Image 1 (cartoon, rainbow, N blue to C red):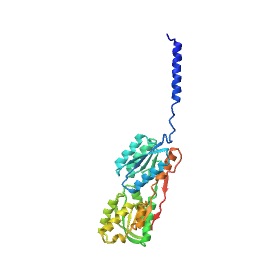
Image 2 (cartoon, rainbow, N blue to C red):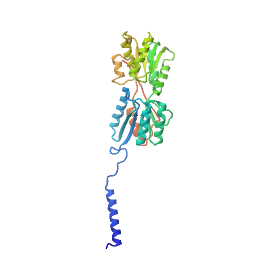
Image 3 (spheres, one colour):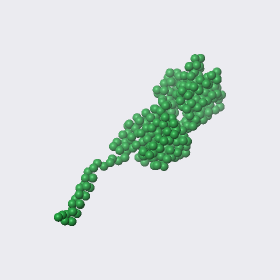
Length: 309
């Protein structure tokens, strides 16, 4: 018969063995290591624009150099309710940080605030949300870009002429600001906007609207496309008309990607394009700073430059 003392000794020995065995198990690596990376969710409003494809490519390239982070991408396919849902999916998933390039400012303000309330820092990239409930905004100065486009056209048209303005989506901060800045840039000149249309940033829409403008106005001196695809669409419409008007109209765009806007300038399709940086590298650099509890600026404005022949 086993004594009570023997039972106590056996139990104690088993407990010691169990503790010893546990201590030999590999410990979970610290967060932010290649073995246990930070998880960053990226909510892209759409991949129908070449510039946004480039933004994602820049994010991926920057992240690839930093094994301590893992990127997850969602494409809202240019649908606001889809983007709202996808942001909330990232929140439920418990990502360490959210990067969002909103389709529209107001509808995405609440989901971004919900992420912040859940303790998830948010980098707003390119287009803004309303208010200040986010960690940092990174993007170009769209008012300045619009202003520079206006000044460029005042110069190349000697201060007078008829302009067609093909706008981005009017419910986006970029579309609003590039319009306001352009109006500032041409103020005091004799340039007149004789036709403007919301083309939702899309080349086919711009091509259709430009056909309408060409049929209505025999004298068009310049086209301001608020991105390069829209400026290119306008050029195609003028060329397809068959009257040579594409040779007499100055086409100006925004974005300046090497394989797109800059290439159009080189080919003589655009008079100029203005660089709008994607902010992909900057977003990843700031994400790591935020995750390491370092201080970052609330507003980080990226510079532009004109590309001409």
